[in-house]
Length: 336
Ligand code: HSE
Image (cartoon, rainbow, N blue to C red; front, side):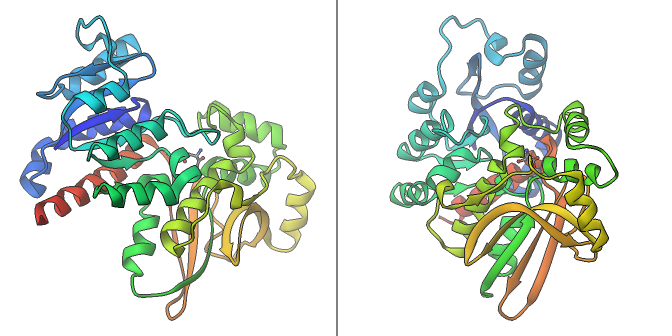
């Protein structure tokens, strides 16, 4: 399987490490032989149609901060150049999510699909801004667009709702989809102020480079868009979400909730309306998880409410979701 990897941050590097450590078992168990023919990061790229060496990629990135030193090529190709000129089967898009124009991920994804590549995206931006049209483009070009890692990281939230509950009619869902704000709110319930809890979350490296994505609810809203489209068959994008973040949650709000045996959580919900906002949740509710955990409760017509809990972020966790998507693609291709 020839892969172009766009974005080589924590997730991209974790994926390459995963390929390296699992190469034998992936081949023996699943017949999967990932061959990375191009990698792009923010400073340059590395290309080899016969396959880049996994451990060398990681070492070069660690040493120079970019993959462009992988070989002595003068004119590094851009992601678009690679997608247009190098033969490949799958694009794995891991560049940072942005909710203004979704670039550069959007152009990577559309270019790849138009050229007939299957796409795995853990970048939420393009899906949050254009889910319906990207799905149409995938269908039109007869390619698969997979995005397991966009919601719940390594916790298979999308697969659970789509496949494990298949045949059921999910009527509503709600959940904690952002680990950083959950960490901050959990710490505020132990007495820390918002600023102290935010600083602690930053010190631990949890907060996105653009803190607004976490604090103003944009990350949770993007995940809600993806769930609403994929699970509920809606055709919605970011502007359809009624979104409030956690900046205005005070210590008083947290204390008031505690008196009612509740905690304040940033809840993303789909129940007639699509809403992200702080809400009191009973401490006895399975949804009421603490720290960086994510949790989501699906309510379906005949099976009642089921809650999934798990880690919603992390390099290796998200890399494992990419591997899951890759194996699905491998299986689908093998059928044809
Ligand atoms: N900033 C996100 C979170 C990372 O805190 O959950 C995963 O999307």
